[in-house]
Image (cartoon, rainbow, N blue to C red):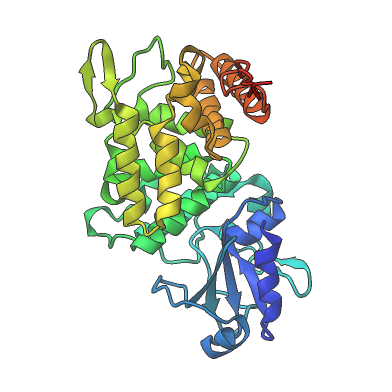
Length: 375
């Protein structure tokens, strides 16, 4: 849980508490969350006065948002934090009061919390909508919950009659999912309910693209993509988008000279750029993720290419992140990470050489030139 984001609640004179997945993140000591959910007894005027540049995102159940470089806080204004609205899922009724430094369990859901059980409350009228699907996906992504026996999560889907999530809601959802440790489970739910087909057709294209079993026994492009998240060592947002889209060009690639998915990396760079631009990310971030997708095949052949062909990419500050993407990509196949360690060896040699004023980037000694005075 991002403590700096929590501190902004202390700037509000009125009482404020963390709710839903954010309270659960704090309980389970998950430090990666970029999106916080909070309820406050302050009104919008008080929030604007004490927090400054708040926004009004137009999201159902969210009255205001505060964005920082570390993430954002979504505020719901309520009459009393002691009587918060009930959630469809019992485990989401959990809350945390930073002023009193204690967790709140107003509806006695602690048993479900201990069991990590995803259960629908009997006291809430069920209404299938995409917001409910999104919340279930976030809970699955963060907490590895077990659905209650007999609970069919596909019934959460409103189908063709549900109003799509706004662009901002989609972006916040993805950032919440990426902060979790069980990303694959969340995306499988989103696919089974039809959410992915409706909101992110670029990803839906991966379903029907088969991999050669000798290279990818884990499954098709979609299955392989989700498997890569199991090997992350960081929840860096650029890396997460890079993993999600690194093979997004394969559905649009054509075979050429024995290569089934010729130039799929370059095609994928264009796919992810359009996707991120639609979600409203800035050009710098888009360029970073596009670089990771476009160059994700390079580490596998780094040892076979002359330095002048690879120096521009290796000199990028994003190259260590590219290596991490390569490690996750390889680890999700039968081949394992040996190719990653080989690429790291080449990269370390390159860094050593560029720091040495007497050697070229490929390690060759520089020729000394002597100036003769004529004496």
